[in-house]
Length: 107
Image 1: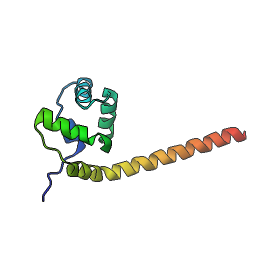
Image 2: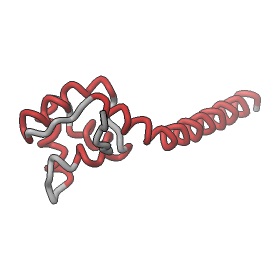
Image 3: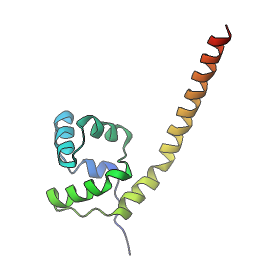
């Protein structure tokens, strides 16, 4: 079976608006989460898997758009390199912060 590939940006584009704040408010209301959370997903180009049921239901209910778990998994896999890079940078930052804190205690 051939699966139509999507990106998380395709999902966000289902909720069109010229105003990003209004867009996040509408999407957040449809999904039952805060608009700040939706804006965070947009910044990271990712929707956590524990919200996928809500996204699939809202896309079907509001836009008559069929989104599958397989499409969301593939979008996550394609995004994996970006996430791995972010995780490495975050780990390095935590390490530098620990080292700086240790130096501060030693002084």
